[in-house]
Length: 474
Ligand SMILES: [Zn+2]
Image (cartoon, rainbow, N blue to C red):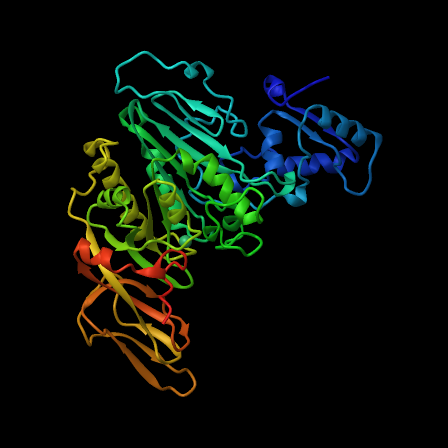
């Protein structure tokens, strides 16, 4: 017998239960009849369960971990024959969450997500049409016809099934030939603003009005996201390992997989981040303005603040730029929260970009900002010289003048108070949340509007997303 999940695709739900039946039924009643993709965020579903659902053949080899019976052995054999992974037990199930992560538009729900190849095979033959008509777009083993929106899956590494967590890749392939723009978010798993931004942008795109292709990965670091962590489970920062190495560390392999399977298909890339470590950023673009393609890309964001940084080695931005793919990071807000202002600003910036690059009609893009000259800033960090509780006196984005009070730091034990004042005129591009700070902590990121030439002449160094707002050394 040579069953495959696909052959089993039209079969009715096959459910074989090992002993004891009563307890297993009880578990199933509580656990299984959950519509995938509705109650559970896509990434919250253990893969074995998701995969067992989608081929509609479900085998439970060991319903009770306390013993094995002939029935369970039979079930295991059938599971093997069906080429299905083992099903997670009830204990392995995660708590359902109610985040706005599942795409609101379920246009592609009918397609089993775990097999990108189950696609419109007919589209492999390019349609006859004008030179401006889009050709089929291939990604992750799928081929999209012009004018389609699809939800694909990127499996980062070959891993044992229980730990394998695929990432969702949304693709809008337009009817007209054009560039491939990619959006990545949550490479740091605790940076939520980008997730919501990508969700909004992708699900609002009408492929029939799109020129080119937009690829959006709302959550790259799924494992970090599920744990509310910036890092991968091994505490490595994924954004230090690009372009990655197929035989390297886990982080390096994941980076390599993303880079080869998705990023190399991009012709422009926007990597979404937030401030980190209790800091928040005014929405801003970080880009290597010395790279002509990246400079053009950055210019498409309208009045969004731009900072020039080459980008530290190992970041997705630096690696992609190095590979000839114009790339910017879009920073907005802080980690561990969804901030409506930051999300709205990011969304508007991306809509402006889509219109500026003639990928999407301006009137269909929810009135993006009209194109303006890029707003390039030179910047520096203001540090505290004293430890204590930081209490800010200014807001993110405020224009301040030299000598103006930015914050006070109060020693909670001695009650001594020290003021932090602006050392020059500038705009607050980033700032620490009110918190306990140590002497030397970077508290305010002040920027001065500058010319493109001046910005290029002064690389902002490691204010880049490598540290997401950490100040330069010294
Ligand atoms: Zn980040």
